[in-house]
Image (cartoon, rainbow, N blue to C red; front, side, top):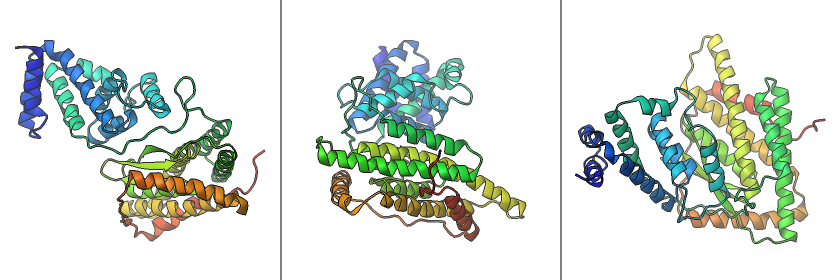
Length: 382
């Protein structure tokens, strides 16, 4: 029997049948034919290439595999992505950045036991089972809205980062690291002030020297638990920074539409404020337990909902403070372009009501934490 026939039989048996018995039969076929290994990898690269054509990007694949399977499968898909660069799809700067990240470091999830080592030491049947579980997922991935990289890459195909965004990144890193709420507040405030000024500067430059750039889009993972309130936080950050966000609950990400520099700011601030919110929530819970109250899911959900609501108001105030009346037509034109791009990508969206926000103590503590992470520009740092 040829290696191709072995793989075909295993796929017919296991990929389109969710039963464990079908998976075991397919894995047994592959385990009994070591010569089929190379063909199995080649087929995996074909599945990855098909995912590119359906609108998926490297970070999307890694994220969905981590969400649905485990670290071993993340190692497998990362290896396939590294070996299958996009050939027949546009490869923009975000593609390059995602592939560079996968190539430069260990596979995501490898901070525990090394999955590559686990995979190499396991038996052939277990390895074949893991591969088939991964391929089952890949062949069932739906098509996604295509994301063109509208931003201009540098000569290496990468998206250049401005000096301002570098300063913002450094400020947010310090805000995450400090153990003093007042310092974190001041650092976050300065970061959002710089983001707002940077966005206005970019808009003015585009108005004076039209570049032909159009709004871009990126996907940002919204990880469990409490995905709904995290998606609300991301939405408020996007809105305050002249972007729009649409949450895909089943696949665990939001698509954010905006101009390139604003998208970068949204990604940075969402990551930083989520870290700060989680730290503050953990401390608030510890205080609640010390007072004799048990930790509850509704406390956390209400905490994050209040945090998102209060932070959103402060972000909006900071952004508005940077805009004078004569700038309004310029920003309105850019926001109309963003809305147009969003409507073309998502002609039908629905509004979801926030669930599980019923814990008064959680809401109060979340609002207090948002006050500590204020992003109004109160004072300049030396």
